[in-house]
Image 1: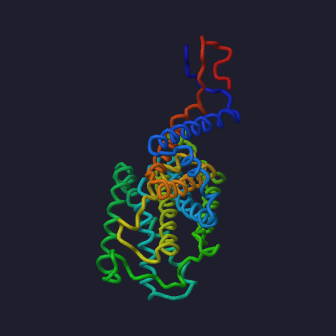
Image 2: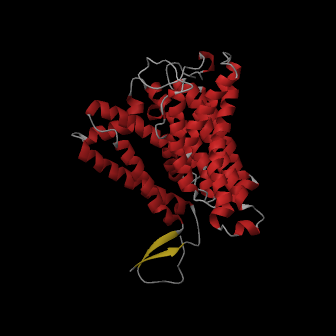
Image 3: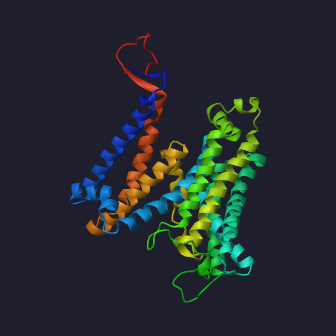
Length: 365
């Protein structure tokens, strides 16, 4: 007889076992996918897992890992704040876009300055743009009781259309370009690389600092405690003296701020100009949702998950070019990891018992 019983003791193994099981499932499924897609699955799997270490340009590959993981981690940590309180902002992609738009608007508004000292102003406007766009679904949730899942998602497509409008209309740049884009910002406002000829730039450090601040807020402040109360016992939030409406406002504001900051950094460090949405928005906001849950909504777990997914993407990109294996294998691994983590999460609260019921051992670790 197989039974599932609640745990009464929570040791290290109760946390580690579900993660190890999820990792094992991901490895097995990922290898089976590689067997189905590759003529040399063992070699390609090894390359996928070790390429950033093997490459002659290892610093370049690790620079890309750190660059991409910084965008994913900062947005995922911001989203996790709301997710902890059952506030579901899934519109980070749109807030990312509006952060870029607001940062570029600041550049135009202040007369296209050419001094590095203006960069913090652009980043600040990016944060404000992300917050402004995020507060729309927050207001609809608080004042009209609409479902924030739907409104935040729909606003992603509105933001994409706004981006298309400004790059084909009032902010249109070189008409000879092969895509709709704005004029570039001044070179002095571009975020510089820390290691020359790599994607490891100062934006990664800025994102890391923001993550540390958010981690402190979540783990060591009264607001962070109110999120845990809302997550575990939503009805107790009112009795504990916390306002559910304020939790919604703050959750959306913080997640919008992180997405907006990521958008402003992306504008300055990567493209230097706004580009039509098809070539500018690459799904980082949606991937950040996956990263948040892979990291169990904990800042440390989220950073680790962002690094892992970015690492796998680097290897998958090389395998795709070298062996003609579709680089969608990285997406398959990512989705498998998410379902494995979510599917085994209950094991941290429950344990599987084989045999007849024994009341003396029920709930033991």
